[in-house]
Image 1 (cartoon, rainbow, N blue to C red):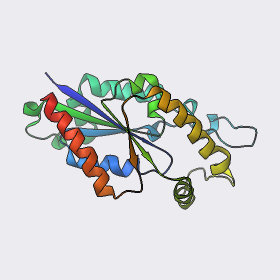
Image 2 (cartoon, rainbow, N blue to C red):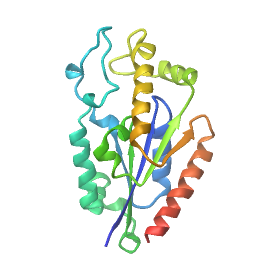
Image 3 (cartoon, rainbow, N blue to C red):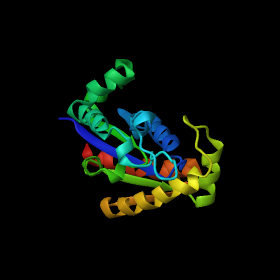
Image 4 (cartoon, helix red, strand yellow):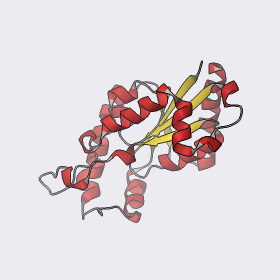
Length: 201
């Protein structure tokens, strides 16, 4: 019998979740990542508000049905899922003996989508202050690029709205300080997840 462990990372924009997710994946056997950012709809169908800002920070801007299909494919057969994504050579030789597969789900609205939220074993949220968040956002290049005023006119207000909704929906949410040392964050999460895996075994 195979046991599945679903670890989830959400964050405000540029909070560092992707970096932490990849670092954790490197430390865990039989582990893969599904990222919500891979499921954005085409820019042409994302609605625009009265200020001319594209409404990307909403579930309606994402193909959540396709994301759930990926997650369900992993749940049905995690070994086959990993083989198709990474190749058979990425599966550890002792995979059958371990019988524990880990899926990391990362994204900015994963806790706001109830069918996905209900599957998670661990929920982590990376937070950073407004000033740091705005500075990091301005240093990145997006396609399409952020128009003037987009952060304060759309990104930050939607973050506050989505966070309130998230806190009402997500239980056992662990808040992580995104300004802390990355190795320290990784050590904290790895210790908790490793304990969970040992309990499953």
